[in-house]
Figure 1 (cartoon, rainbow, N blue to C red):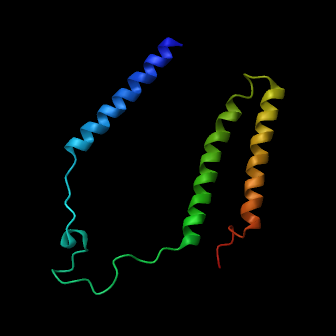
Figure 2: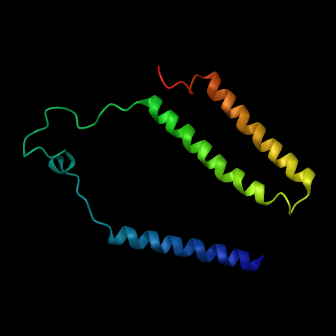
Figure 3: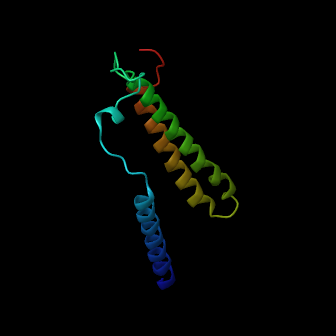
Length: 117
């Protein structure tokens, strides 16, 4: 227990040291109107530099990331099948799959899986 607490303390200390070093070494930026605006041969920009962002595309990307992480969590379940108690393994996997199916149903019910508006 003490070893684990010491390792945690060392990791937190090292991460704080690295963050402080990166903050000290990082490039300093001064907020200036010309430096913050997009460069168009020295002229003021004629239009906004930001393109309107599709919220639907963002939500589809988030759904993809969630299912990608779910696959990363499901793969180790296959390798642990032979090393653990079957009933405990079955209950945990069943609970996990039910959570995934409820999330999928909610996304389907909210019409988030439609590719067109």
